[in-house]
Length: 165
Image (tube, one colour):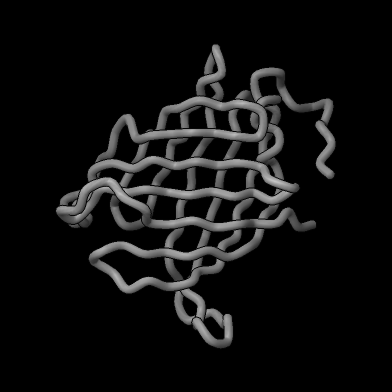
């Protein structure tokens, strides 16, 4: 069980359940790609200021052996709690995409949608997304819907992660 650290600034307390190192697996799918399983590691830290640092990396898993096949997504960013139960999530991807999510946080549940997406000239078309994060029976569960490459907003990723360390 996670215990609230006394050093966590008051604005971060609604997000404190995210702090730690998480590992697990999930599924991905989209009309333009082949469905697959993926592994993921996430590290969420804070340095005493009123934001959380988010680092995530994922890799495609062999469907039969569960072994790592190749690297997949990498994202880095910051959670910024706002007044009245609102939150921002800023994410950068090495694929040339920057995302700004905005949404609401409740005890152990966060719902977000993109407020802005920036793409470099070489990035694939990517228009919008929603994300949901929740703490369910001590596991970090999350899901993402995406609108990209001519497709409407629809299910893309989901995973279940366990706190480690």
